[in-house]
Amino acid sequence: MIKLQNYIGGRLCEPAAGGYLDDIDPATGIVFAMIPDSNGVDVAAAVEAAKSAFPGWSLTSPEVRHDAMMRIASLIERDLEQLAKAESLDNGKPVSLAKAVDIPRAVANFKFYATAAMHFASESHQTAGQAINYTLRQPLGVVGCISPWNLPLYLFTWKIAPALAAGNCVVAKPSEITPYTAFLLSELCIEAGLPPGVLNIVHGTGPQAGAAIVDHPDVKAISFTGGTKTGEWIASQAAPKFKKLSLELGGKNPNIIFADCDYESMLDTTVRSSFSNQGQICLCGSRIYVERPLYDRFKGDFVERTKALRVGDPSEPDTNIGAVVSQAHMEKVLSYVDLAKQEGGTVLVGGSRIRLEGRCRDGYFIEPAVIEGLAHDCRTNQEEIFGPVVTIAPFDTENEVLEYANSVRYGLSATVWTENLSRAHRVAERLDAGIVWVNCWLLRDLRTPFGGVKDSGMGREGGFEALRFFTEEKNVCIKVDH
Ligand code: NDP
Image 1 (cartoon, rainbow, N blue to C red):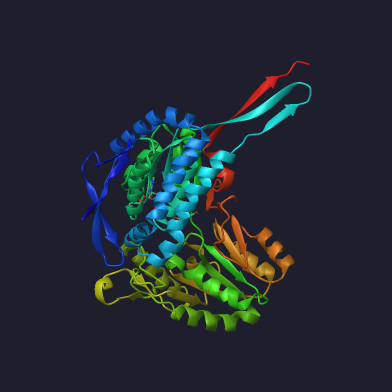
Image 2: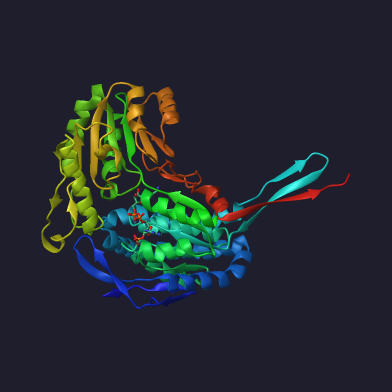
């Protein structure tokens, strides 16, 4: 049995209270590792370690931070294969997906922010004839990074890298459901010679370890990605303490397909944008609206393509759909298929648990589902399911589809398929979404601001936005005598 440990003050250590939680492989239902069940004592130790490291780390030159982060990036690259397997074991996703997307993105996150640290600059403003002002950007101190289970190492490093690059020391918590790659990262940080205390990783549950990070008076900022409900709670705790907050929350993203689209490209991408990572990507399109003249053709082809997806053992190279992350999550997703039926929907394909043969017979596998016949304002079309379940519906006009698309409380991302440039711009402008993809999906330039509108969150990650989030900005105003 693998025993994970916390990473505090540069050392791997047991949780203070000695308790452990189970880490379950969703593809088999078998416990493969023990996770420290950390509490406020562990978090306090991590914060102390981070505070001790801060004076040194915050004064290092950007070059020194760059070199340390690039060493970590190259160690992740070296261990890509092992990390991809670990991520799959934790999360149930196909190893091939973790190898192609998750782990390379973790490398890119460290490389991007290692170099961004070298280019981060501040502004100066001259008050004519009177003064020069310049903006001084200083690291905040100790910051907290809390991430979810769907893209474990990808999102964990997306927070940690800018925080470190800006000169902060970090106390981070991965999801208790998928902590394995975060533990392997702590081993790589030791190997890379990251100074003790600069990054601390505390494992454990959200309500215990996560809440202790949010609550700690010396944690100056929280960067959180996860569900909207958890985000709401964190905001309520952090606001009275005036902590800086970045919240990347849930989504219910529309995929709008006009009849003039490049059909084959749209179909290929729509299969991916619906079911990649078992539909457990916050950016997956889960409500597909198709212009009426194309609807029947799309419905037939999309259902066929969905049927052809191979649900299987995540370790096999030809598996398209692995296991969903946990038994509880599987039950939640299946309950939404039942709800869709109660709400009058017709399940065109999928929507049931699949029992595989062999080592995965007890795993949490769901056949990807396509559902039609639902009103845009029913619960199935309003609530985040976060699994391999999409709804399809026709529309007649631009105004009508915009009303459907914008009718949810969320506003994370949207996809638009059309060859009409003016329409693309017009619709993108009117969609309530932090990112709109036109004729593509999940293309990310790390320099661009990323984040949701409405209940999908506040603050922006990506590019220099994240470095600015992790710094305090002061204006220095110098009087100039002429
Ligand atoms: P949760 O909100 O349940 O958990 C996210 C993280 O917060 C986990 O590490 C969790 O710990 C921790 N946590 C839970 N409760 C607390 C608490 N009271 N105080 C502090 N930390 C806490 O989300 P999920 O892990 O279920 O992730 C899925 C959600 O994430 C979906 O809604 C999805 O849309 C969203 N998401 C958003 C993205 C975006 O960029 N906007 C990207 C990816 C996902 P633990 O799991 O150990 O309990």
